[in-house]
Amino acid sequence: MSRLRLVLWPTVAAAFVFAILIALGNWQMDRLAWKEALMARVKARIALPAENLPPEPVWPAIDADAKDYAAARVTGRFLNDKEVHVFHTLVNPKGRLSGQGYFVVTPLLRDDGSVIIVNRGFVPLDRKAPASRPGSQIDGETTVEGLLRRPEGSNLFTPANDRAGNVWFTRDAREIAHAAGLDPARTFPLTLDAGAAQTPPGGLPQAGETLVTFTNNHWQYALTWYGLAATLAGVWFAFVIGRLRRNPAGA
Image (cartoon, rainbow, N blue to C red; front, top):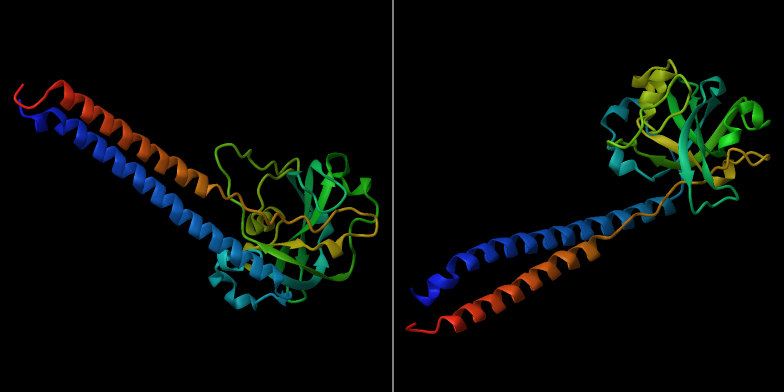
């Protein structure tokens, strides 16, 4: 048996797995570049002055990703009777409250009849009912400034929204509008997180709690895949040397 045949198929298998591991490492490096670019874009958007919403006719063509975290300003009247509550666990708060509670999310009706869904801020579990937080609802015309947020998706572990109990687990502007009996087609596709300055004098809801940090473990993942590839190469080398030593030429 030739020495080449002794190591041929193990080498082919090792090369195949090695290529997969390197490809996975490269993919994570691409994801790292994408995440860092995203973080830079978000940081730049947050630093810009708040702008008025684009005109309603262009809303259907809006790219939610391009508007995510953009600073915006809107004037209208809160439809307080259509307030909904989105369950949230607040960690690393900017205000004094944290833990489990709800985001108070309320439609804001503009003079032209269009609607934007506003996340007014955080309240603890025992302050879900408006009656438990006097002065928290704003009557009459008001202007809200904050950051736009794209619709939230769900996964296998996300509970279904409990419309009957008014407990939501995702924020989707047009879904909330539909549940409130409003026209989704006339609802801005992103929600608006009210800035900290929008917190009422009583402190509830606690506004300005937009999460602007991103998990970025792609470098560690890339090192893991590259490390596994290097380990595989070392194991293959040791295997080949051992096999050839046990079967010297001419044996």
